[in-house]
Image 1 (cartoon, each protein chain N blue to C red):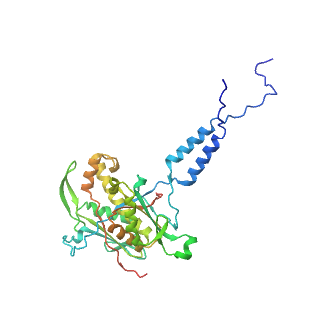
Image 2: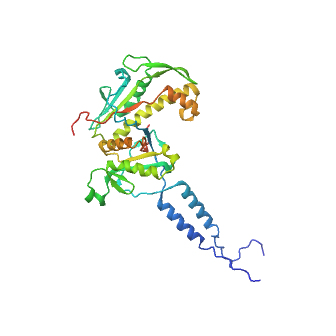
Image 3: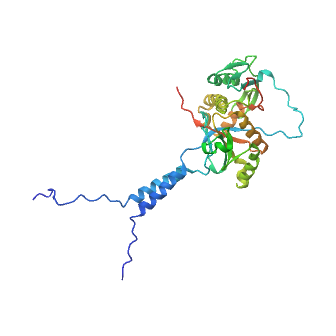
Length: 192
Length: 157
């Protein structure tokens, strides 16, 4: 019986190299990551006036960004680096200061009776604001909320928010809601 | 006489290349698994800003991308140097976004539609006006879940 000749496998490496080079060039390594936000729903068109009750001045944390990238928080111009601390102070209001938001005791599963802050962060930017600055501010606001959540979960459950079970996360989200509202952009001073 | 004496005429044996294909295939699979195929060629320059509170886009198949930035050099003659929107492979106007979202939805499975995310890859120096327009269009199209694409900031502490 004649032996069937073996298929030469010397070129296998070349073929594999070719495929490898194709994949290296055609693909990108970076994992896409970013700041996740949820936009508010578009109000229905026939809704003429807002019938939501007005929010008290002390419950609003107004953040303004103007065309020359200046940041104004609650009437004073501050640096982005100081925003996180100020936001945390607003969200927690540890010493119940009059000018900071009021809280409402709410029954939350796993946490019991908890004073939920009524504070709302209102972010408004100008048409001329740079996107990089806008994102930095958004990032600081989200960071402040995340830090407050982390602190609460460490105190209550002994671990970070991200490591909690979904029920615990839900309880913490209920205790510290992330209410960042964005107004429709308009001119907020500064000429450009 | 000794057993260990080197024979002068003996050549060093060639390194076996039999396992080379296996090694290369291993590399190949590594790259196939860890990377993603680039599906669009960028026509705008996008330098993504940095942030710290990042979340990863887990399911690539659910993400639609919107790019905003200044047109690349070869397009500046036609499209100018002002920031423009790119959807798929072409320049677009804010009013095209609604149709883009509808097309993206049509190409997905119906059960996946509620989990779709729009990733905004916007250049750092873009003015917010164009971003605001995009956000309004996305709200009209009810594509509310968005992700501002950002790089991890190097913390200087």
